[in-house]
Image (cartoon, each protein chain N blue to C red):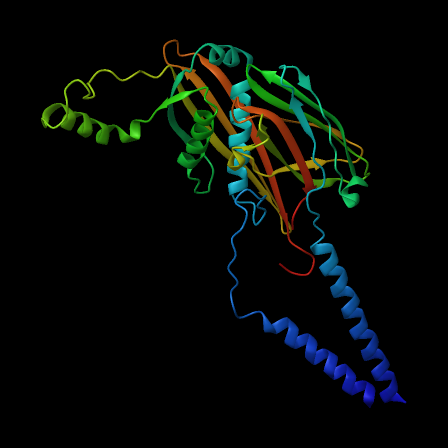
Length: 149
Length: 201
């Protein structure tokens, strides 16, 4: 009888460890890929034709929303202005990266666009700005993803 | 009895799985632009953030935007003073900022660190008799810098048994060498915290 009890206890213990380790694994590696991207293009006539494309990763779209995308020219350099809204009540630790494209949609100076941290408090709206690396840039994209462990 | 055999088997597989990969090191290439959060020490991500923030600020600051819309000013870089307790390669910080500013096509730079080699080269062009005089570089023809880039990096560190909080502040100034006036200045703040986990370090 005692033997049976011990086996039962051991079973519960092993099960507990298995459940615990799977929770640790799932929570530790919960990074998503590219979550959202958007672009603003300058038309051939020189006027800004703002095309706003927002592609969401379904997982991250539950937590954030890109509410505004604007491009302004400072001199001949494109300035990207993006507004992000947190739908969550908790603090979100995210990261973002800008990508820059010339009029031929070729990526410009990718080595100058590192991932940068973005902390969004509960229900916070935050603006993100960046300046294009050189005057050839006519289009930008922003990518947002959760912070890697 | 059957059950205990099964359990021993499961445990055995678990131990084998956990210990199996421990001995051989795995080397991979990583993304140089990924966000690095290994420790609270000054990292590559901090350097990249400082560079982006400073260059963006300098390019959009209205008085500078007006100047660079008319000409490409010449800048010389002074070293950034490291007032932290860490070893930080501040030349690497200024190198990154300089590279990004040159790539923007809006600024030109002079580099005093290569002057000795440059003097030797001009001397050779002038005196060796090997170089056509009409194409030889002349002494006294270099362009003087209009601005000088200076700066500081400082840190404030606080810690208790579980939490370590490091605050970095980087200030950069652009000084007009003719007038002595600071034409532009910007600060970048970075806060990093590390927390010891409840289950040991």
